[in-house]
Amino acid sequence: MSKKIMLTKIHNCIGINSTDTHNLTPFEDLFRIATNDLILDNLIGDLKIIDPFARMCLWGTKRNDINPKFLGQYTTHCMDALEFLNSEPTGEAHVVLLDPPFSNRQSEEEYGTNNLYANPKYMADLGKEIFRILKPGGYVVKCGFNSNPPARGFQMVELSICNMGASRNDIIITLWKKNQKTLTNLIGLA
Image (cartoon, rainbow, N blue to C red; front, side, top):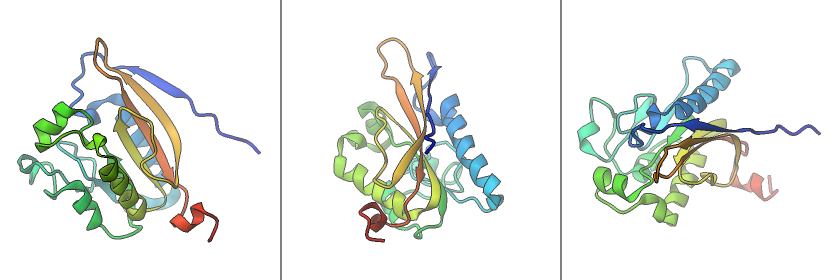
C-alpha cells in the first residue's frame, strides 16, 4: 500500500501582520489546494465555504464574525462562532476556514475575551460542528499555534509554517480532509 508523504513548507513571513492571516501566502495556498481539488470533482459553482471568524476575509460564501464592525461589508452574520456553526445545515459545506484569534491580544482586541484556544471545550465543540456541517471529502483550512486536528475524523493533507521572526510565534497553517461520514465510522460500527 502506498502512503502519501506530506512535506512541511516553511515560509518567511517576517514583517507581515499576523492579524489578517488570510493575507499570508500559505493560507491562500492551502485554500487553493482545497478548492481546486473540489472543483476537479465537478463541484464548480456549487462550493459552499463557511468562515466562522471571517474578520475581513471575503473567501467564504457565508462569513461570520462576532465583531459588528465587519457586518455588511465583510460578513454576512454577526454571531458567536459556535452559534453560527450550530445554525448551519448538516453535510452541506465544502470548505471551512478555521482562523480564530489564537493569541490573547487578538482575542481581547476583536472579541473582548480571553484566548479561545485556551478554552478546550469551546474548541472541541467548534470541531464537532465543523465535522457535522462538512460534506465527506470536505476540507478545513486551520490556522493556529498547533497542528492538532479540528476534531476526530480528519486527515491532515498539508502543513505550512509561517516564520514570523524575532520573538513572535510561528503560525501553523494546516489543511485537513474529512474522511468519515459519521462518528460511528471512527469506532467501526458503520
